[in-house]
Length: 175
Length: 197
Image (cartoon, rainbow over the protein chains, first blue to last red):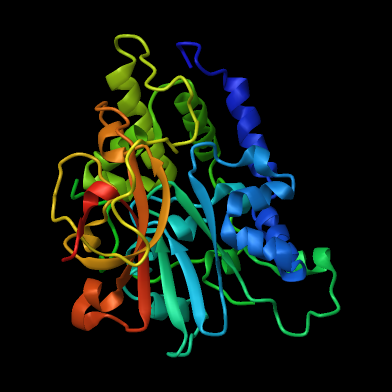
């Protein structure tokens, strides 16, 4: 700041922007759209960034990121995202990461004992469900496409988006 | 470097403390550090790899004690001390620009190829986690070539490399203690990988 590189008012303005950020709402909107629009779902799974830009929030993608990769949960596959080396996280779609995602406990255990960890967080996966852990060790960012909850046929896209939690898109929760 | 930051597989950190409705920045200084880091990087103080490496170079006890934004503050102070003394020397005038680069050579590997990670323990920055060194996996995805963090972190240049996602069976990583039925996918640069015969 002394060198005039950064104005303190600009710092405060950016903090305010982060705090007012809608966080994981962008991811939730992408998920709800994927549940209701098979064409969009295919594009989202093919290449996340251009698909998410269709929803009008490409402008705040973290600029340095190489790709956004979206992994789909099914009856037999469960995906969960971690960064063991630091705390890489898909800011563009989920906002800033929660404290637990950055914690040594999560970073150390998610790759070694994901089933036990998920069970402790309330997600007890049957053994026949394959667990896929994505360790974000480069500039590829990962987001999980959760399964559509049962009995949600009557809901429209906005109502569906309201059901999608941040933690389901990280993969520590099923809907 | 074999540092405290390389946490994959470590024991002893206990349960994950997941609290609902936590504040984004529980203390005001944390928000300011977050924003300041963004500005400092785009002003050319350091690239993302040098920033991460500055965090990794912290004494391990401080790494654990300072918390997430405390580590960011430490890295900003380290980089400012090292780099502002002789005036700012921007590494990349395009702060925040994409790390994707065009390269002339074709990727060595394709999806489905069996690979083994190298057994190297560099003192500098690297993005091959310790738990995945000298381990056998299968290429699951080929990404665009990217800036190579190992050289970009310490001023040796971008030397872009092909980037892959490699799938590792959990028994290959954790042996008899593996839970079973789990695959760990890690994004790895081409120099880390050797073809399996």
